[in-house]
Image 1 (cartoon, rainbow, N blue to C red):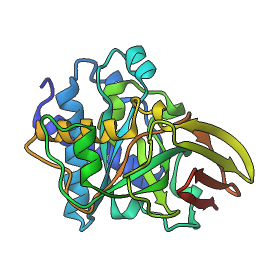
Image 2: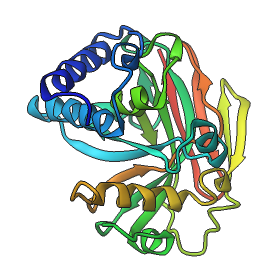
Image 3: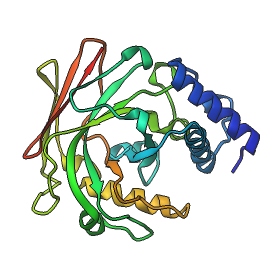
Image 4: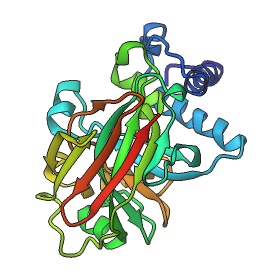
Length: 262
């Protein structure tokens, strides 16, 4: 690690304050160009500690940067990971207040709900599917705190991978018998399709992202707990939204989930 404990705490406070006050900031590596991956995750964990200290609960985890092409572009070999607390949850068909966000975008995802804990190292797709109670369509609202949505990878890890809100809905569906690689999704904005894709866009199989998350947590002596909701990563590009927009994700054989921006 390159940053001391005081600097990590200061950066965590700064980024979380930007989130809570819905104001942007230049990426933190502008002032700390030597920070490393451990520093970035340490800042993220300090943000989580601050939230837990105010009574928030972790209800889920998320993977980001789950496209092989994007990983190659960024010069990394695995996705990035973040957490989701209870204040990020939007009920199915619920509302998101745009005034509480900076520049929101939406991504279509497959959500895994676990019946058993998942622990690495060595976690693999088969273990993920065996531990999954059911799957759901999910839409993540990402909202980077960085000005003009411009950041590098270390900055976005520190910023909890741009997490802000998410919704799940549709029909809880057992993983058995579903080919996640060919699973088709369509995301609509105001009734018009704006993004389409298949599960294979996420590391060849969305369950691979969950396995990588379990292996990442194992390096910190942690696991994905039973009951957790895990967002496995965007299947398509992110789509910008504004007040007045309604977004619906339809997943073949799994129904749909919707949220509105007001």
